[in-house]
Length: 378
Image (cartoon, rainbow, N blue to C red; front, side, top):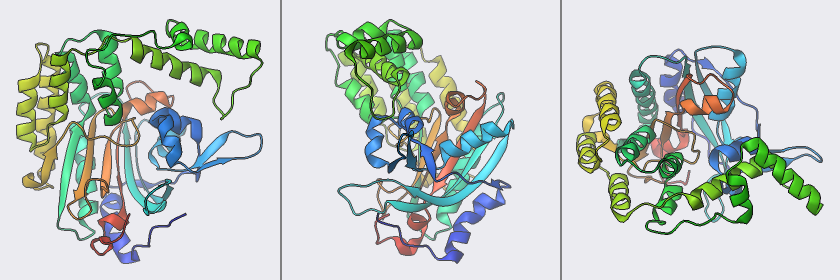
């Protein structure tokens, strides 16, 4: 396993200082994390980037690829309505075909709050903390790239699409690769989604899982890989829904492609969104208005000429459902962000939390933030 070089202690302390000064309490996460949960959040394609561990007869686990999910679970288990936590530790992601480190240090901060009230101030606070931590490494070539999964959902609503298609597009909004796959279906006729997937598509999750178990029993087969019938059935149902959903028209696809191609200062980006929107644009206008409040706060910390907005901004894990952001270095390029983060309210519900709970966080890579680490892969 390739290990990232160490950052000098004094530099690590400087990068960490803004997170500690926020008043957050220190948190940690187990080295081993449940594999199936992470695959449900990131998709099966993420498996190739995880270091999988399985004891004989036990469930599959993996070395922690990040801290967010683990700390969210710990917060929910604590029973608190609100919490602010910072962390520091090693994370692990396989990297085939490159010489990038597979074990590396992450610093981060996660903020949890009860439902109710506006989220813009918290979003701006966390993005500003990520900027301050990244900037403490000494780089002078940083910029803050902003996106918003909720803005995409509001834009989709403005186009007045069939609900099955709109739901599918909202589901893949934070994962550009899957979104482009959906756009490639433009103008295509629908299919039955495959025989088995088509049979399961009209059933509830419990009914689909029961039917799948019955098929296995009749065939005398056992599932492998640690996935149960409910998980497999759910994936087959989603596959069928994707295949049978109406395809986009050329005009709708062109509008979405133009929306995703936006890459400009926030003011110009939002003006372009208004031009592309369809007739049902009330939600989009409200979302853009919320961004004016975020930007007012952000520009107290981040120079306005260092801000960029692009709806195509997405991360490896698809649990983000609001603001997303990356602090980038011109010297390192967009593939090696210095810091990333965003809002993930829906993740708490998926982990068993209250439906109105709120969560936003950020992660910083100290080696990338450190100016003297510029020449190395990280």
